Length: 361
Image 1 (cartoon, one colour):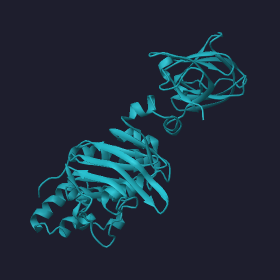
Image 2 (image 1 turned 135 degrees about the horizontal axis):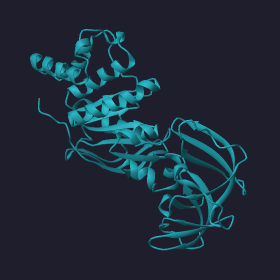
Image 3 (image 1 turned 180 degrees about the vertical axis):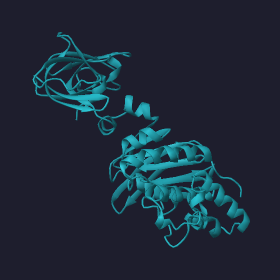
Image 4 (image 1 turned 60 degrees about the vertical axis):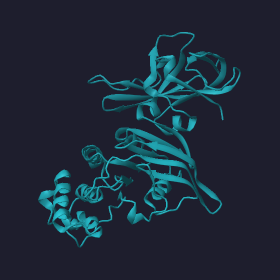
């Protein structure tokens, strides 16, 4: 078989409507060969619709799907050579593991000996060669997932699509399988797209993350960039946790901005792109980027209301004099516990770069 692994994928201005409802709103993505991209967003954001458009299960209203420089819009699903791992794996319970993995090869009328060799290679890759003769209904959830992955990779797909593949797994197994799938995807060199609403899954697995909201692409960037410098207020709120401090943009230079918080305190922040001085804004800072400090005019005063030890860290909820509830994450020393309820504390951001500014809604 000629390998199709590692081909680029372009979604060019994709639009899709269900009746009068716009499910995908002019989405463009350029995905490099061999890249693993996560489509991340809440239910109804359009991520599964995009996956089905790539697979050919849905014909988009507008735009193009191009794989390896070739437009595939007019091809039926069976001729697109796209591998799919469904949420429920969709294995054949009456077939053995080897028969499941070789099913796509048989459908493509691959020579029997070549198909047997390819099946054995795939089972070795997912470390299930010793279970080739077992029925899939006799396997654990993690083993079934690996069979589904081997079956999808056996046909050497141009693109591998993974539709919420970990949702049926226990939490303890999920991380192991995320690592396993990334290892196998790297070894095969396959271009892959994973659909998920789990931000930890997306940030941990993907080379780049496409964050979607109401059919629109909010940001497409490496995980660290999505987390550290969210492009929009939606991304800031959907990915991770952020404290929101309302205020007014006092000044906005090329390297720094100053927000005057509603309590009168000045706060140095990142530049606020496209916002004029005097704009009503929100300054956003993640819990791990807040620091305890000594009492000072440029520090937020608050009272500890709750502390939750989470293994190596402690999350404190702190109420400010203005009634804002802020979260502060700090390392937990061995044997230590949360701060006392009612303790007065003062906070400031770790740096101006750790504070993002967005227009107030």
